[in-house]
Image 1 (spheres, rainbow, N blue to C red):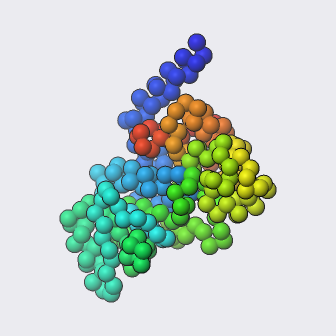
Image 2: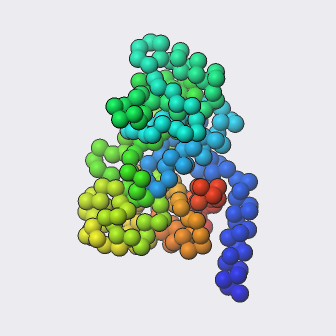
Image 3: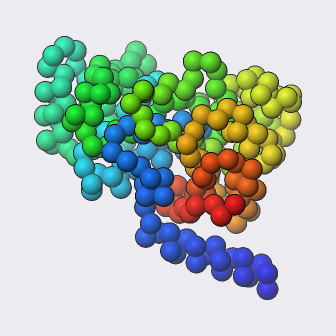
Length: 247
C-alpha cells in the first residue's frame, strides 16, 4: 500500500506541475539570469527560453563557450557600432535568439556587446556562465563561474545520476571536487557528497536537480535537497516534469 501511495503521490504532483512553468518556480525576472553547474544547463536554458518568449524578447548567450543552438536562430555578433542595430534587426525577425561571437572551434563565445546594452534590447537574458564537459557534477576553480555583474540570480544545475558513480567519472574539475570533499577521485558519490559540494561552493541562489526520471532518482534528489540551504527544484527537464522540493 505504501509503494502504491508513493507512486500515486508522484503522479499527482507531476499532473499539477505540468501546468506550472519552471520559469515561475525559479522566479525568473526580467534582466540577466546565470545558469551554472552540469547535467542539463542547455536543456534548462532552452526550456526557460521557450516559456519566456511568450512574455518578451529572449536571448540565450554565454560568458564561456556554448554549442550553436539547434532550436533557436543563431546570431553571430558583429564588431563596432553597427552591432546593436544588427541585433535589433534580428530581434524583429525572431523573438528568441542564441547570440555570441564565433570562436575558433565553431562554438559561440561571449558576445561583442555588453550585458548592460543587451538589457536595453532584450527582456530576458539567459546566460550559460559555466562549462562542465557534459558531466553531471561541476567543481569550480578560482576563475569560475563567469557571472555577469548584471545578473540578478544564479541557478545551479546538478545531475542526480552522479550518485552511485565514481567521482572521477561524473565530475568536471575532479581534482578540485576531490579537494573540496576531502576524498579520493575513486570515491563513489553519495547524496551527502553532492550536498556538501553544493553548500561548500555556495555559488547559487537556487538549485535544479535534473535527470530525476524515475521514483528512485526523485527520492535521491529529495535526500540531497534536505541538506541544501537554498530552494531546490526536482526535475526531469527532458520529460517536462518539475516541482519544488518539500525538504
